Length: 584
Ligand code: B12
Ligand code: SF4
Image (cartoon, rainbow, N blue to C red):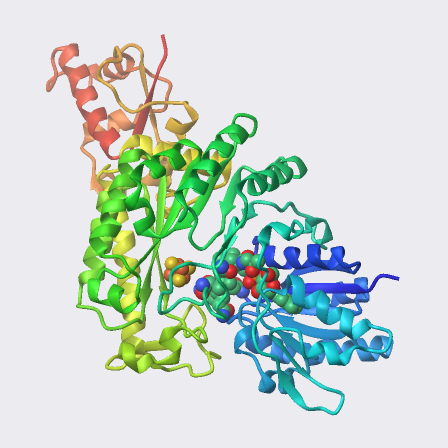
């Protein structure tokens, strides 16, 4: 009978990881199936884990561990063991792996009671380990040969085998076994065309374990995308999740041409992340990527201070980030995303904020910026020697710091100051986006691209959120997106132009103190009267006729009154108060 292996990622938060695919676990499941195990994959908050354990009755539970859930797993694993023992009289083998496994050792085994830790990529070392454990006689001698295995022998002696698990030839891997999921949902949006990263930024956990940079054959990557689309035709957005996609331009071009073929049959768009220099060296590649459906590009931005970027070993400058952003915007890329690190080496005050504002202005409607605290990931240059970066670690064991609180700060700063800085940057982001939106500084085609991406492909950005936060502006653009109206346009004959409000009159026009105000702007009686009639039922000519009597003194001639209505509608359009539609 096949041994059952439950692979799980237990998450703490409900935000970022809710809908993620946990590709790593499905890769492991594929590798286990190939070696005749029966894997099941489960991901979710801890409350559901025991249900999965009861349902499966696993021989092995594999826990995926990252910086976020490490401490919680220490508490969870003993309680899972206890419950299994109470229920069945036996406990499954408990194995821990994942990105944080490199940092786990004897202390973790001790407190969690896990049977072993496997460091690095698990596709080869996990089945090797299980084969040893389930061999007739128990092949403990072979355990010493498994790279990255941290374990105790029968005598209780602790061993940490050298090395980490690493798959040399990614083309030999079986596909992620999504059919092993215990969840009723679709998978297959996330694809890795390679693993590892050729760069070595001082804060990044990607190169920990010295996993080398390896790439798959593009033909196989495209075949995987096709298979995923066949199995899950609802996929509209393919996420190329490599740390740095397109470092090899020949491969990238092969990918683009394959995507063009796929897109001729399936309406999909795609995302990737890359290093700024890669595309600055070869801007035409970016154009080809956009033409083949790239809609969102993520680049490392990190800081507006060149000296801090140098310390991060980022090998970029703010002006290069700006240059690539401008290039991408000019080429019509709908979204360019980037993150700024807060709590890193002290920056020249104001540089990052000014840079963020500059980027947003340069790419209004396109540039999508986030901030995050610097985290103390093990074995990064920063965590090895924070002092060399002018930093101190305040949350030494990372128990108190999540993405919501700094665990590393400049030595001459305080946590409160770092928090205040992130708040300031976030305010600057929203403020600058707000200015672009309120002043109608986002070109219409870029706005429409955001609505289209959201509606047709489920790809959102901070811009979509900012539009939604302003209901009448959202309504204005939705009307345009749906083709149910258009912006005010003087070339439409007034008898065919039907204006329509973007807000509910009774809710939005406040009459407190007898002075009508709309979104804080005082309305003249004439403006109020026109807006009152902009319900999509009267043409401009009819509105003017309605008001002729009342405004005879100001506008004795009906054409002058019509012009006044049109002038006001033009202003109202600039403020997103009305759209118009043609009807003849
Ligand atoms: C997609 C992604 C996410 C997704 C999904 C996470 C996931 N676990 O799949 C989401 C958005 C949820 C996410 C969130 C976070 N992520 Co993330 N994420 C990634 C990313 C870009 C790809 C992950 C991936 O699929 N890799 C490919 C697969 C093949 O690798 P893998 O998942 O690591 O799995 C392999 C091995 O780790 C191992 N393995 C994994 N689990 C197990 C279990 C057992 C039993 C065994 C034996 C082996 C094993 O074998 C797998 C196959 O080779 C990586 C960067 C990267 N290049 O990996 C960062 C990365 C994993 N994330 C990271 C972090 C820190 C986070 C966060 C904790 C915080 C943050 N700032 O982002 C959050 C919070 C998580 C949460 N609980 O909410 C760090 C991890 C560092 C660390 N030491 O923990 C990484 C490495 C980014 C980085 N460069 O710093 N992330
Ligand atoms: S930050 Fe990006 S480029 Fe730098 S090492 Fe990490 S994955 Fe590579």
